[in-house]
Image: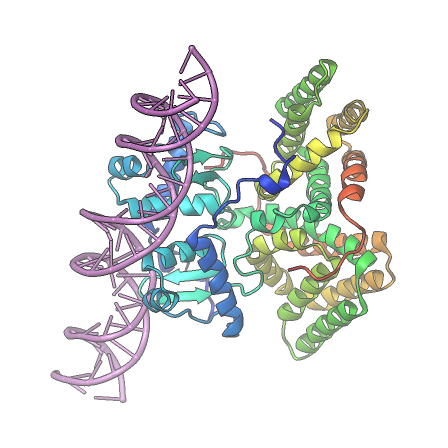
Length: 243
Length: 243
DNA sequence: CGGCGTCAATGGTCTGACCACTCATCCTCT
DNA sequence: AGAGGATGAGTGGTCAGACCATTGACGCCG
């Protein structure tokens, strides 16, 4: 049940070939000093030089295309779109726990805005969803649980109420890391009760269509969450070497 | 040179097969009422039933894996991770211009936070970068340009100064749409000059390490940008049917 | 009954082929 | 000579089939 306890004995994931190739292509971009608009060598050449099949090259390229880093034109070639952060997918970026403080900050940026918008746009139905999530949290905690699901649903409901799919999408992208912080925070003694109050204040502000109050309530809540997890994981020295 | 002027005669891009397959798989997830954790049919079955090669199925799966929607285990199968927004990549979500108001709101959430953080963390070198970008903007405008590159570089410099790669990554994901709003805004008569002032205020606040002032300056600036583009593109009726 | 080997199922990669599209080149007709 | 079209090499898109690597359940054997 306890998952991360034996950190050294975790199942050691073998990387897929196309992931390595994405990395290699990133190195190539740097070495060749490619800039936006430059063309990559043909797939056949890359395959030969890297000693892999064209199939694998194509998988890597397709992923890079989906991530918006390259632009592939049938019959034309593959072109670089964004040299910055080439091949650095967000899940990959966040797989190290020391990124969690950054995740908390990103969450503040996104969710405070979402709360502000929600206060101005929420429908009655969305208020019902928020109340239901909060109640679910209360029930779970009353029965000795941590209220994790209710907490997640509540924030989800606020996001829905903001009626901005771009923001929701961005929040979804860091959802996994956010979930980690959620669990960590609610595992703190006495924290679930206080969390209920914080959510209650957010709900009231959104219900009252008070955008500023909603933003403040959300910010206070997230600071409370960060208070624990942040200080535990990150020595406050920022800006050091990264890779 | 003028790119988007003949909207009807744009080069009509044929969709790639794997993109269609991603969509089909999304439909399958709904029809089969799959929930997180459910397993997909084997690649060979999917290929046969959809009448395509396994290669193409794999490309679709690899993309979905990179986007975090599925979890593929060698020898085990492919499992659903997030049913919500399945296969809905951000570029695809934003390719319709009516999403631009949402992009502006997302930009506010991200960049206001970035400005706040930048005020607290910026190094001398990053201040230099901000000043250089602003100067580049001034020079370009003095010579009759719109200062687009300088504007972009300035916001980039602020983001760098915030020293939060997660936030920067999220901002990068909407970079293309942001660029559209930038061009549109700076094309407004008299706007470049006012934009310089707005950037100047942001720079001063960040330089003074005044987080609140930086946030306010950035928000004012973005509101100014939105003032034009927002009202032009979006009839203010939100929450209507989408697809 | 429990541990362990076996093997079918399933994803991972490779090969070679052919199709579709692009673009520069050259040829033809005016 | 110039405009237009035909041609062909280059390059991405897809396919079929094969084989390897890993998983997980089943059943054998102690």
